[in-house]
Image (cartoon, rainbow, N blue to C red; front, top):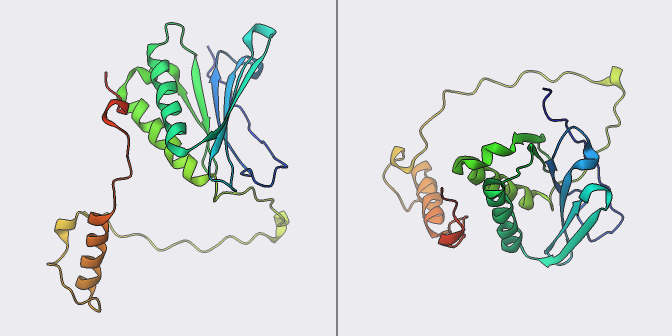
Length: 206
């Protein structure tokens, strides 16, 4: 049995207030793209909200729903329910493809969503993708093939360091020293709110 077919996504938009790119999720029933359920998420750059378009081929009688005026947390609530539904569904899709701006597409077996780890990971991936919608634009390459120059190799990175705060020196209020700058950084980290603002009932469980 062959693996899932890759869906190539290219969705231009002529609406100036809508993000150039979108997040697309293909819920795959087989090799034919025409049988996929698809979800597309765009961002309205003028107002900061999002719109979601859901399309179901519905055995030859297509159904499309559009939700507009959704703010970030509402979109993430939608993603949470979508991922948990993959776990609960008695007739699961075969696989799910995630296409996000500026990142390689990812295809995962729908059965993987039975595990909390996968639901949490793709929830976080979608959160990351929503942030990138505003900052990612398509680029058309203009270089001729024979004009490309291979850049020199980057210097080797040192071995990975443990960067927990306990590796740093004692805090200092003197910003002009390395130690002082580190201290200022960690104070900012402690003051900043946690990124994951989900209410407790929106965390995945078994």
